[in-house]
Image 1 (cartoon, rainbow, N blue to C red):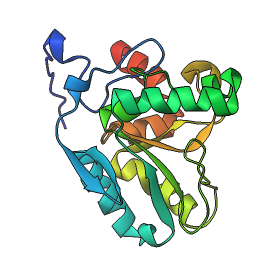
Image 2: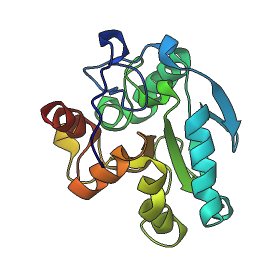
Image 3: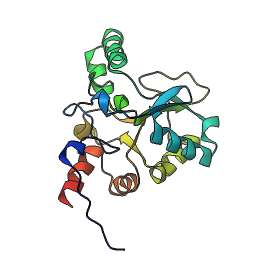
Length: 193
């Protein structure tokens, strides 16, 4: 197949499923389109639909639960302040994004946990066996990546979080998985192509 060149207006660069939100790049609430409820959390519409399809593929909701989805700036502020009080600054810097810099504010990120166990809100249980392993193996087919993989902490500036998944779309997720790229690395990679 022939490739087609697509031009994107400059103001659209920081929108859509490849939006990079991290300590350097903030999220603006106006960027969130339509949110819908799924498993007791809110997600951006397309993200919620594809997460549902992924879970339907292997009856995932029997074994996996949604712990956190979209968050407002004020909710992120509250989580951040409470974590500093409860866990200290060092822990909070590793696991909780500063308000305005959380992917959860986009509606494209979801934290998942194992159903039937007590899940910590900041660090839910999500192992590499059983249904969670099936989820991870199928995630890229539906446009999801494990956002903060082990060994990439120096790139993402966030600790390893096997429970945090981000919708980036297809084929991006498959390319990122195949090449072991984080979203930070992938955005640089596609600039060079």
